[in-house]
Structure formats: structure tokens, C-alpha cells
Length: 176
Image (cartoon, rainbow, N blue to C red; front, side):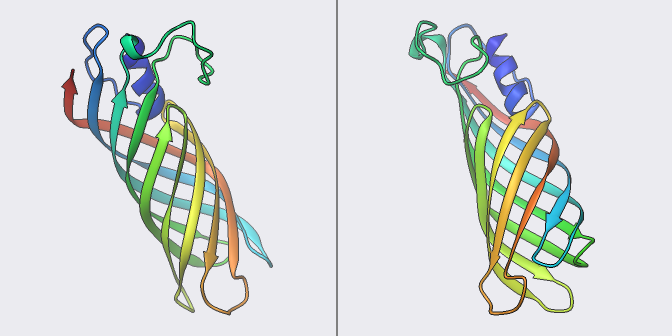
């Protein structure tokens, strides 16, 4: 039950678990991105979608002592390591641009980070990089993202703050 809660907290999916065994799963997630984007000269609403594929590993009780000082805020949740790839598309209504990014994602239980290549389409096409730390509880992820373009045009960077609402579905599972 605790491992089910751990993956539910992380990925909003609840694959079956067996006793103190380790659980591994490949999960496909998709969802909605709502936020605010801030540029040098404007701030406004952001709306988009995201798709990701993550490999998760929930460590069984034999590797994690309840007496250990846990960095996890919920004492009975087993540690979950996760990593994968994400892709997203967002519409920045204040700047009147559409942005796409793709790259790796890594995390431990509720804390994670993703980032990668960035493309912006509108009056001028631009390219750069982005990084986004996330805090995930259930289907809700709170995030802050920083993006930087590699050209010399104005508004060379932006920041976003927002909420990802993502639902997951395991496509492969293994209990060890």
C-alpha cells in the first residue's frame, strides 16, 4: 500500500506491489500546463500541454530503514527514483508566442528537475535552452521554469511559474 501511495504521489498511477519487493515501472504521462510567463517587457497567461515517459524505481523496505533520517516529508512513503523524457508545447499569450521544449527529466520522490532544448515560434523563430525544477504531489506539480535564447535579440530570457496537471498510465511493470 505504501508503495502504491508513493507512485500515486509521484505519478498519479497505482500499479500493484508485492510486500517488501522493489517495484519498477515505465509510465506514460500527459496533462495540462497553466501558468504565468514573465519577460523583460511583459507578463501574462500561459497555457499548454505536456507528454512524458518516465521509468520509476520504488525501493522496498529492505533497502530503507524507517529509523533513518528521511529527506521525505511523509514518513511512510518509500523512496522513488524516476527519470525519463518530456516534451511540451505552451502558448504565451502576453508575448504572442508558442514555445516547445524537449529533454530529460530526473527526480527523487516529490522533487524533480527537467530541461532541454527550447524553440519559440512567432514573428521571429528563436532557439535556446530551458530548466525547470518541480514539486509534485499527486496529479499536481508546481514549477518554476527559466528559459534562455541563444540569439542577440531583446527579451533574451523568460521565467514561468505554474501548475502542471498530469495523469499517468503504467505501460510496463516489474516486481523484484
